[in-house]
Image (cartoon, rainbow, N blue to C red; front, side):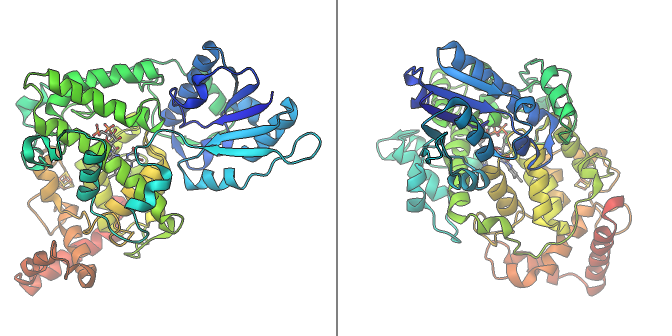
Length: 518
Ligand code: FAD
Ligand code: SF4
């Protein structure tokens, strides 16, 4: 072969220009690698989903006439990283050049850019980096929108994206003359609403061979495995899930976007799309998802309201691109940020769901069972808990990076370390997403079935979130008091009697000292 082209596990973009022409002198390589399976402890479903999607992508490329080699853990067991593996393949196939698509994670980009390869006659090989052709903002344009260490308002970035890509626009005005319909959204699910939530569309992929390989190579993992893998692992399945979402979930997407319930074992993803794995692995392009959703909206004859479609578009055109911009503008320093000096360790129930706090039990159990929790469960339940109890962001990042089906560092880290833990000191969010039990009670039915009492702040049966919230606010008073978005909270606190304040802080301290027993 003349050229070797490497395809990483999250680069399954069938529309990439690489594949437009068949060239028998090009060898495509897709490889399972121990390094990738172990850089963090992944959820078993995440490992299976990536390996299965890679295998099928290789099969599809091969079927359409490309030269492809798909290597399993058995084939690559001797290679510590990609440069070692690629060097070996270059010699084996006597290639003259190597091409790769730019990785989205800093860790891998550094590895690929640091690679120096030799040919059989020991001359050095040409190595070329190309774009993944996936994101809407070009890699070289990130600096036009984002500055290191600076907060950029997501809303303004999102409006620029709406204009630039002409999405939901009428000339230079937003459709409906409003950019943001959040005010119409965010309802709680009432019991009569829950019955109407559609059960998620699940797939049934046999991943027995992959599981055997994981076992054979001692790859550690967390979480539960369903009999068959229920995540989409091909482009066709991803498109099926997209259609299902547009048909059954989009009409209520924004309305119940922040709602949580412990009363729907079979409807665990509510009206969310569960498309994050398909998009992050690049089986689907973000604009394809947006356009398909908008076309359903336009054909829906009012069944899908503007506030629902706008809420969905905002997540992908706004949040997803924004988060990636923050990541690249701030790496590598971002991964060490710990602005609140949080040093606690995660309690063991993050791996077992064995806790008396019902909101935590439900959110963690669902994550262990399905490698999935929706945004508000991640942000306002588990994330909020870690924020209030001062868990070290390295540990928080590691847990989120491992457990979720969609977790890749470029998107996981700014969401976790930034948005949820405020460890970046305000680069993503200008205020910490801290909340007491009231917020969880407002958006869910968790508290109704909890061991703890939501209305109480002190005493052994009081909801831990209530005192932990005040403990957190008081601990960080100096930092947050001047913030116009939270300053008024302190006036509320100051109105309370000293003895009441002391009791709340004592309960908060007790909770932190006894995290394991909550
Ligand atoms: P939906 O609710 O249906 O939303 C549609 C799509 O919008 C998602 O598929 C996703 O592509 C995009 N999206 C929505 N919110 C965000 C966001 N904040 N950042 C980036 N994209 C967004 N998302 C990941 O893809 N990977 C992660 O590792 C990840 N870690 C997170 C950690 C924390 C602490 C928090 C608070 C959020 C995290 N998110 C992450 C964002 C978000 O929670 C998930 O994208 C979403 O829950 C995926 O489920 P869904 O496809 O059903 O999303
Ligand atoms: Fe969670 Fe507190 Fe509600 Fe229990 S009472 S579910 S701990 S918020």
